[in-house]
Image (cartoon, rainbow, N blue to C red; front, side, top):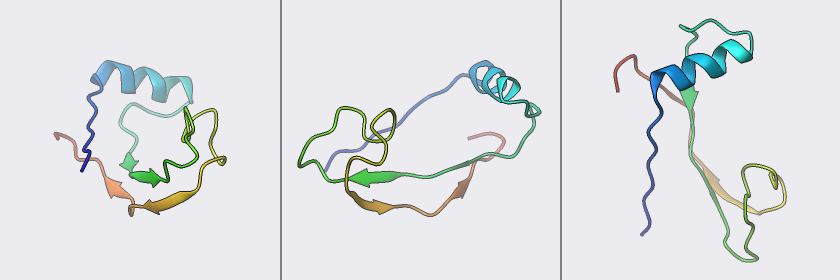
Length: 67
């Protein structure tokens, strides 16, 4: 099984929120999406969103203040 994780700096998130016109303390949620690998898509959840078949998507989860 393949697992993945990501790390974002607080300043990166704060800047992105500001560019979207949101306050730095806006509540955030995350989800995980798994897509079928056949046929392969280079960026199925980015520029190619909607071109890959979705296997499953997790429920939304709240991002805690310190995680």
